Length: 373
Image (cartoon, rainbow, N blue to C red; front, side, top):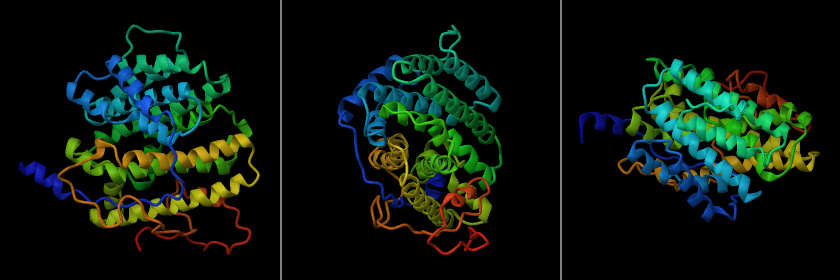
């Protein structure tokens, strides 16, 4: 083992169990879905590096899709699995493990956006990722209404803007503030277009006024954020080993609080659990008088958070053989480490807590709870 490898291993953290009260479920087409996706992905030539192609081939994109969306028709679900494959390839091959600058990323994402805005405006200069997304956008027209296509395209703007922001920080010697990091990562994780697919895969259409409800907007952002934080918690060891990456919630918290990684890990888990609890409480509130379509969307958000963890718990992509062993408790835990009702003192997300109906419970304290306790 080299000195550099030893330094990386010294920064790794033990695995932590996750709290997620949503019941697990999986689509019955899970077995065939991954084979179809891997075969399609390899034919797109998204990556020229053979080692990277092999890594992506065992990521189980079919499993990720079947666990996060255990409902709906197999055909649009297959498009979702293909979309996951393109996003993972784009993340590894262009965003995380290359020297792509924010300027180059802006150019690539602009081409991607044009492809999904006007897929008929074909370009011979398409990169493999742009060409694949153009084809997926065209196929999506068979299953999505014009309104749903507009929502998905708008969601792609959210995602691609996050990629440019992320690229600017990956080339910086500094780390962003906690508030900025949470804002950029909920966008760059790719959850916006993923949650826009819930109603398309599910075969229903939520009214615009229902999606515009601040409570539903908060639930949507919470799902994006939970997935992004969960990814940070289980993938940090892999990212350190492969890319020396410290653009992670743990490392940002170390900077924000002036603490060591193990202490930051405790704060990250507490933050994550408090948001998970809020998501459950606010979901229950929304479901009281929700339409069938809004019910499907709301439950789909929770299922995405749960299914993402079910997939990650067995995905070989995140296995680090030399990393620290998991602490007692396994992958899951029955209770949250923090079930507080007070908003986290993070301006970009503190408004989520304001959406809870306070009737029947004592009012929250006038000041927010500090992160460092």
